[in-house]
Image (tube, rainbow, N blue to C red; front, side, top):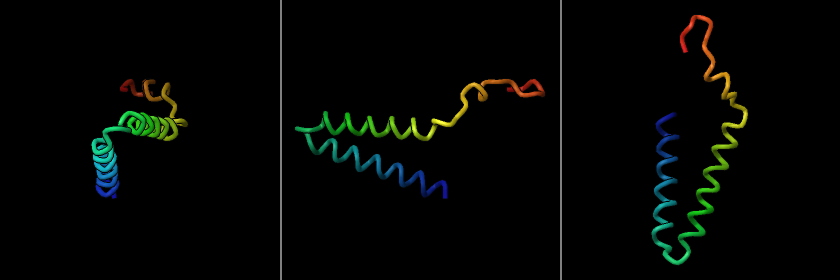
Length: 63
């Protein structure tokens, strides 16, 4: 399951980069929109993650 998800992500990235390189005239707007979508996706996925708890030490003293 994990391998198929990773393959799908890599395929989508390859298609995005191929389209970006083929359209020389509109590469900047397409790239900007693509980066915006990637950043917003990462923000949505990690919005409920408690970053302070990740850095806290556990009860047995290890991190």
